Image 1 (cartoon, rainbow, N blue to C red):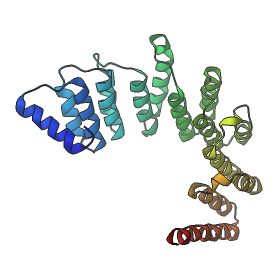
Image 2 (image 1 turned 90 degrees about the vertical axis):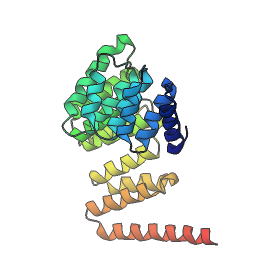
Image 3 (image 1 turned 135 degrees about the horizontal axis):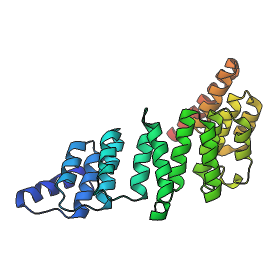
Length: 264
């Protein structure tokens, strides 16, 4: 079932014939309906399943998280017959972390995941970066530093996404020295364009415009909208409105040139 129409026809056919959908087909339908905004239909398929597996629970919980209904996702998760794995935990964790007022529940769930390690629920890159985003959101550097320590201990700091998330977290928390330590530290091989953009933003926050420019010009791959906008915003925030305007004009010239090249 690759499209909504195919899935819908398959569902209708099973209802008309009185046949029972397989767990695989039901799980596919739950995902298909939720991906197309049909949360009620996704839930109906889930409720009608005679037997569910961990993929079924993951699909329906992810659907509620996607539509920002963490209350219902939590209720499903807490059911005694709910089958859970790392994906189930991470899905609900991300829902708590991004929902205002549920931040404490995210922290509680992260602690529960630590306690569940003996049951095979090991934290992974997604887990720790989700919590780093939460630390950035709350500007809680103490918790962020604790997470960083856990990441180093478990090796979860050795990814591109982890490095950029750490830079962003420390920058949001006003810990510029730690930002530089991450950017120039032992995981420097994982510094990519996302991390460099985060570093440019950090330098701009500190008023270190020259250093922000240095990173920008030394890395040709940063010639994208995010990098240019970060730099323009940094100049403007530091009172260099004229320079910001010049950079914006330069960007427009580059874009116009590319457009003309395509036409020719």
